[in-house]
Length: 265
Image (cartoon, rainbow, N blue to C red; front, top):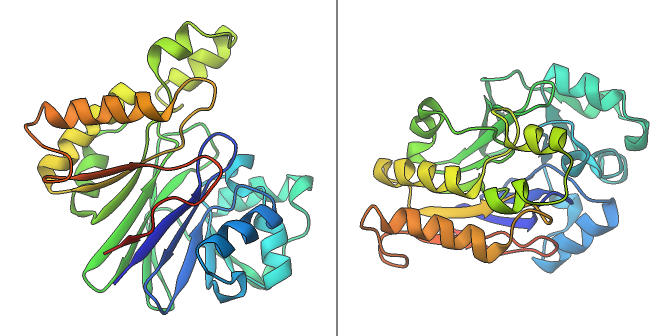
């Protein structure tokens, strides 16, 4: 059995807990150490019980707590070489213990305890961003946020996910009619930016047809989205496929500041 839970999610910070009961990992650690500790306590997990932290990319809302969690709990941290270089250039993260810094090349797999972890390249404006597929036995969880677009190749790859954390970052009208400067709107809406609610809904249709039935909408923008808008868009897209929520699929929106639903697969 795999358990998974979003500890917090959004432009302000991101982290997902995944465990098979023997080995537990975090995907990203995007808040300060104290916030991460409190979130883990909220789901009855001790930080010292973690086996590793997996880093998707170097943006601060994904790595803010990496250094302190590594130092405080002697946690191994996995990232690709370019992401490590970028994190080393960020003085706010503090010192990294070389003995705990592991390189996981993009596209490759590694075994952490009883979990098999694969990194997969993603389209985003970071140095070498990835998502992760985490397997235990015949169950797997996929964590893919910060996506400028969802290509057919990516949705095909994710088609066997038992649980998928997937970006639904912004509402088109809120972004383009909002106060952000044009260069930032272009960045967010670009092919290496973030995934809109509408594009997420289209991707979910393809994923549902491939057999994915459990979705967690993730990384919502605080300024350019709301949980209600993200959910409404996703449900409408899946209903267009003839699917009924609760019967054909399950869907949650990851909370911004607190742990969400604990999924058990």
